[in-house]
Amino acid sequence: MIGVFDSGLGGLTVLKALHERFPGHAFLYLGDHANVPYGNRSSDEIVEFTRAAVDTLFRRGCRLVLLGCNTATAVAARRLQQVWLPGSGWTGHNVLGIVAPTVEAATQTPWAVATPQYPQKYNSDLIAVFGTTRTITSGVYREEIRKRCPRVEVVQQICAHLAGAIEDEAPESILDRLVKDGVDDLLAQTGGNPPHRAILGCTHFPLVEHLFRRHLPPFTRILSQPEVVADSLEDYLARRPHYTDRDAGTPPLQVLTTGDAGEISTRARVFWPAVPAFGHALVPRP
Ligand code: DGL
Image (cartoon, rainbow, N blue to C red):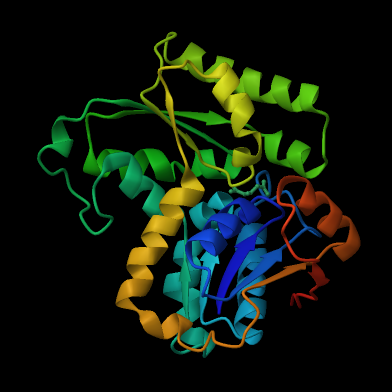
């Protein structure tokens, strides 16, 4: 069983793509609605919330957990992989983030190749990245893209209140205004030049992709993070089939929240009618 974690509803955009891609695999989702949004929180809080959630998913039988959250990936993934996991006692378990597959897709360069390669080193595209405060200030997208494609220009834009507004079910007019402001601010940074590609670097943002499409120049292609994450996981699992070899007999889709299960079930069905009812999860924190 594979765990998928997000601060709230956003990771469901990733879960849905994975469920559709791997109908025979079992997925367990955990949304930390008790603490959403993460995007403007301190690094220590994000690391601690993410660690506790991953630990909970491991306890419930997942051997692989995917952080379906850019903020948790940008801030916590490396610390969990390199510091916490080796000493945690969870031998044979692993944690993956979603920045690596997104950078791979944006640069058309495998993650393991962290230096410029021909012909990518001649790539001089303009790439836009929209994200939460913590994801953008971490600089991870700019740094990892430019390692592989030093001539690519990466323009980053914080959308500080968008994930929270999506979680709060803000009216479409407010969401439209937040997206338009983000796109206008980004285009002010580029001097009006349209980016070649846009990364919606927050898993909540695909829920308002139609608004990004409305306000971004028609020239700009929006990279679908849920799809590139599914592509990457397909490749990863093909080389490590043991993570899913006990899935037979396990329900293909289970969803949990640290918030109010009834309320979250209703909200989640608005954009994914087939999602099962949420259960409540207690995530012990120290
Ligand atoms: N969906 C998350 C992300 O991909 C976090 C949004 C938030 O909680 O601020 O960044």
